[in-house]
Image 1: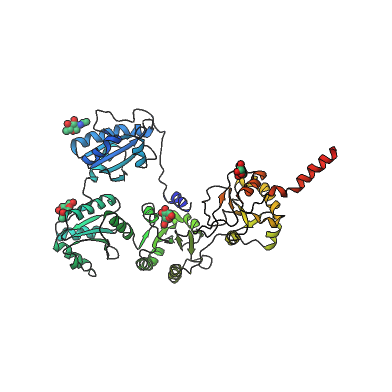
Image 2: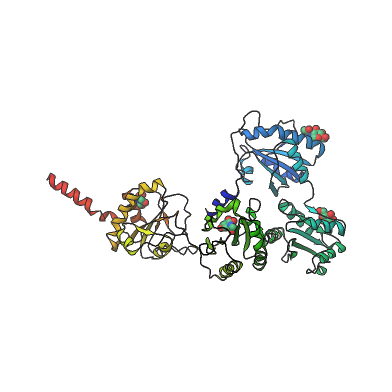
Length: 529
Ligand SMILES: *[C@@H]1O[C@H](CO)[C@@H](O)[C@H](O)[C@H]1NC(C)=O
Ligand SMILES: *[C@@H]1O[C@H](CO)[C@@H](O)[C@H](O)[C@H]1NC(C)=O
Ligand SMILES: *[C@@H]1O[C@H](CO)[C@@H](O)[C@H](O)[C@H]1NC(C)=O
Ligand SMILES: *[C@@H]1O[C@H](CO)[C@@H](O)[C@H](O)[C@H]1NC(C)=O
């Protein structure tokens, strides 16, 4: 949930699906150069045609119909000028398995395929000239192999982002083809360069004095180079495609980069905690650049650091439990625990100091930092004892649930939710029943989840969510709380009572507590007699 929220703020790329213009056919003219592929013909075609643009479509889809004439035009022209590039179509209403295999969720979806194994989203225009230009660019090799030292060094000078160098002093065909295949997979994100001769390899030492290349002259090596920081990170594990892809993906993350639409996925794909510096001006960012580069280097592989332009994405502070109005700010999001940490904003309205940032990072790494918990204030003892339903907030949620001797039924609600308002009197009734019988050891509770950030075993996706924590139930390691049973039946008193009876290991039958009603009935019967 937390991440879906970020996505919606950061990536406003709308998936336009279905409907749209409706004239013409979505399927290309069979006499055109567009090749219709089926599950049966797919693999062989891709083996024989190393560069294919594939359109996954449905015959009824309006945007597919609109694309068709442009697609045909591009295919026919490319067939003349670049016969090594093929344009294909796959009808997803027929080839369902194939489309599922590619995770197709909307039409048309275009993918650049290099053999049956490597597929990349097509991110070019949807008219003939644009398609051609994009695909012709794709024919350029994914690895640059400069011939001379001058070419090599000027290519390196051009790199603004971290890039990859293969030192192939005595490379064999196999390692070479592994590298090419890695480069094909990551070509959209990264630049790959091969240093193929001894003088080129040696020139790396002239540029990067702190790096000794002599040991690489007789073997293959792989380096991630960070041009801004002039650092080289060599690959030291056993070579395989997966190992290299992983290594490059981890190590190209800059020590301190900016998170934005382009880099969002790179950071989200990393399991590491993320330290965010929110800034409003370039001066603010610059004054922390050195600090974060240093921290990024020190905690490489343990934590990533990013800058975030609060003018664009400032609202994201809310999902870090920080106030978006007070910027600059520094916060840490620990994905593994779901916890958030930050330099206190109330005490530092002008933003954190470098020392405070460093201190928080250190404490976080030692495990001594205190997470920021969004919570309403603790209810007083009187509030607890007078309410039929136990009032929970973040601060007392876990403590109550840690009492394994009780059956606890919790409503996770939001103050603005209509269904929750409707449920409120019934929930109060239910709570009252068991509260009058404390020996039952059943507690009915509620928490405004929109104001209290608590970890739950089940992701709360709508309100109200009703979770029953049975007494002596199994404890989940991640949350440290019992594994709850979600309630999905009708939101009625009798049904709740029966559910508690069914799921409780204490076998409490709350219907026996409904004395008043029974008495009333008895009186009525009595009158009749
Ligand atoms: C593709 O090009 C080849 C060679 O020029 C030609 O023989 C063939 O007819 C073309 N295919 C289409 C569908 O235009
Ligand atoms: C590696 O592949 C490149 C092209 O991808 C080629 O130019 C080079 O000769 C190959 N090197 C070896 C050692 O096979
Ligand atoms: C957080 O973890 C989830 C799965 O547990 C993963 O899908 C996601 O990419 C991770 N994101 C970050 C920023 O670590
Ligand atoms: C309780 O258990 C009975 C018998 O297994 C079942 O018929 C009934 O639907 C259950 N009720 C609820 C509310 O779970």
